[in-house]
Length: 86
Image (cartoon, rainbow, N blue to C red; front, side, top):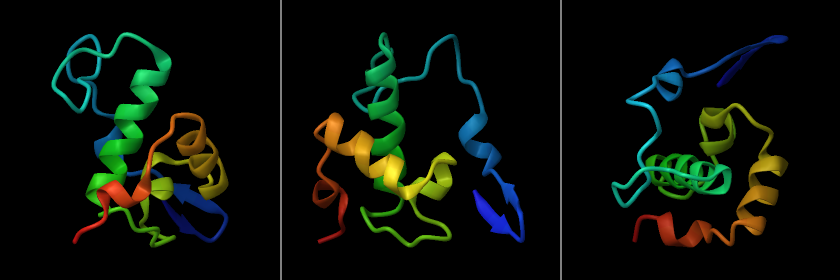
């Protein structure tokens, strides 16, 4: 999601539906809301190499505020450092 003035543009590639349920990071089917959120957050972090480049970072790609992403990561016990390039 990119901010253009007062408008937000969502990266449409994140909205594409593949099958009846989204695959998890391990390749299985997602069966719970938290598993789905975890898969989306981990995919966004992986694509951003764990960084938080605000205009194009994982929160922007997911279309949520950075604080919300951080809150969800704490709740799901997702460590951003696991996705940083070494």
